Image (tube, rainbow, N blue to C red; front, top):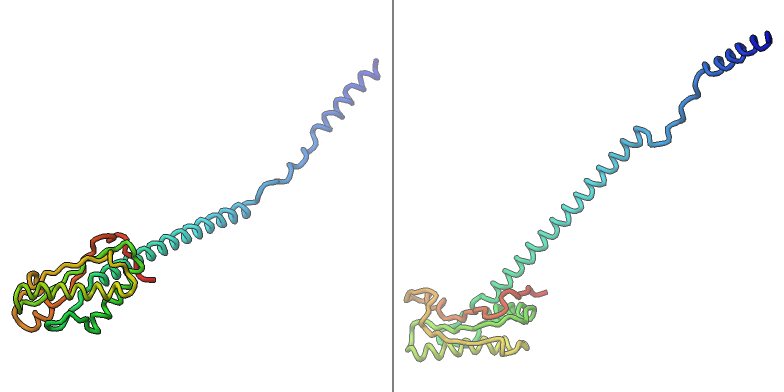
Length: 197
């Protein structure tokens, strides 16, 4: 019994001594380091900024393309509406008038839905009947020139106003030269005007 008395405290002392030693070190971290997290954050910000710049560049390019398209459409509309002028008592097209009409042909070919009314005008000299007939001959001459390029005649109507609608309401050579003209009114397809390619 004495042996037991001594053995028990020794065993307890050994057990307590074993428990009192330093604990094992904590396991090494397995996740990203602070530096790696900071780099990942910086990379993410850089990607977001690059994406924002790319989107802004695309939007800018789309806006510029739309502005260019609208400007080209406006130029095409102005080309279709540009007047041509005639010499005194003439319905023959001048070289300058033909150049204006050739530009119209290019726009009309690119815009097959567009239809035009050709309005013939004359200056105030001459009788009303003569000026109405002269305005009609001028409108016909323009239509024949345009259809000579293969454009269907059905796309053009003609009307003569003679001297009734002067562009310049004066009685001098400058005014008369501006009143001897053909004007162009878009009657169909105004929203389908395309610039020539």
